[in-house]
Length: 410
Image 1 (tube, rainbow, N blue to C red):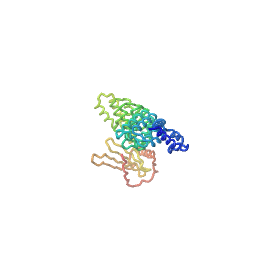
Image 2: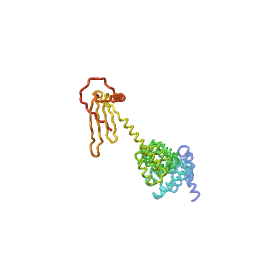
Image 3: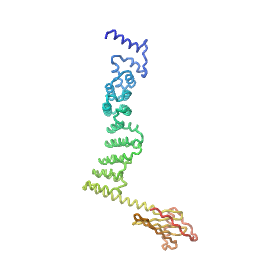
Image 4: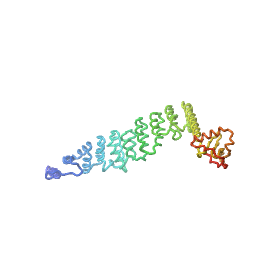
């Protein structure tokens, strides 16, 4: 190559870029970058300029040089790695804009390179870089590391900012993403779990995810985490008290006391838990506390049932009529209906139906005048008023056959 040839080429470049002393305007670059573009020399100087543009996080300069010069796969990967190292998310997005994760001559090779970039980005924890890689990953068809892989990576590292960005992008019905985050963060610190739980308000139908994690955390006996989960609505009774049983099986007395204290179903499945624990570990020190809890729960349930029945014992049927229903120990009911206008008491005795049979009912009617104990009528009149009814003024006896009211439901 002669000196004259070189001079002619240099002169041609100068004339092209500076015709008649006026710099050529380059489309796509802001005014402040025009002098920079004019200053780039020949003989590969653009490569150094491209590296500097990436390192300085100048996406417009990167796009200009990527559009005006051909880059090979090795160069593009090196530029991406440089962008990750320099926390240059905007420049990284510009490098990936056209060719994406095309770093190798095969899809598996592309994926390996992409995973390497994600690993480096996770170590740096720069959100702009993570967003650029995740956004490009979502566009890839053959070179994607997996649709939910970025979220799983960020969750596995307990990276609050990265996970928060992913959950912000997720739809309210995407409870699967929330469940992934919750499962990973439950293995971190209580603060990590509290961060994950702060997103429960966004995702509908998160109850099952909470219950599964409650059972998982119960294995560790971490009372602080269990309290956080209970505070967000996790149900210790889910799946037959699975979380409660985990505390028993792993010998966590404090955790058992916490979950059992928040249980509403120990009366129902408590005996089953006791049987399972006894079979697994007959020497478990928690067998006695469990038995005491179950007995207390049964007693409480029985008291609640009695209270409920007592509240349902009296029913105002009409302003002048009320009924009293007693539940018999052997099953069945005994109902007295007091009609203060007709001045009659109707008694309905119903016996529970045998298996496959019909219930048996007996009915009797008598006038108030036939009731020897006057206190019964006085008490009945007081009860009618308490229920909001009214005793009618004395009136001539009406000879009318009483119609039988439907017996109240037991």
